[in-house]
Image 1 (cartoon, helix red, strand yellow):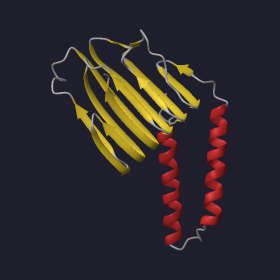
Image 2 (cartoon, one colour):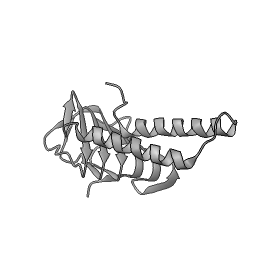
Image 3 (cartoon, rainbow, N blue to C red):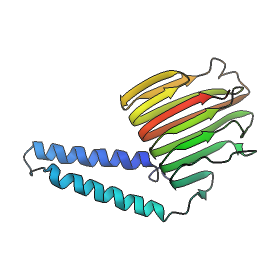
Image 4 (cartoon, rainbow, N blue to C red):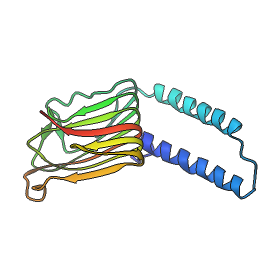
Length: 184
C-alpha cells in the first residue's frame, strides 16, 4: 500500500498546490486572491475530514492501522512489533511501545499523524534509531528539541549496531508536536 493515506502526504500535496498557485500568480498568469483560496482550502479540508469519518476506525490492512478522529492510543499489549505502520488523522496520538513484544533483530515502526500531538514511548531496554519530524510544530527526541517549520531530529543508540533487539522508529506529524521519550 502506498503512503497516500497519511496526513503527511496530504499536507505535502496541499503545500505544492498552494506554492504553485502563488508562483503562477507572481508570474502574472492569473490573479491570486486569498479571499477565494482560504474558503477553498477550508472546503477541501472539511471534505477530507468527512471522507475520513466514513473510514471504519481502526481499519487494519496487513500490518497497518488507520484511525480517523479523536484521541488514539492503540493497545499493543503482547503484540509482536516487527514492521508496523500507524496513521492517525486528527487529535492526540499516543503510541506506547513498552507493552509490545520487541523481537530479536531490527524491528520497524512508522507512526504518521495529521493534526495534533504524537507521543511515542520507547522501552528502556531496547536500542533505538529514531527519525522524528513535523511539518509545522515542535519535535522533541529524548530531550533534544527543535521547533518551527519542518523541524527534524534523529537519534541512534550507541550500541545500536551490536544490539540484539533493535527498534527503528519513523515518527512524523503534519501540524502539531512529535515527542519520542523513554519509559520510566
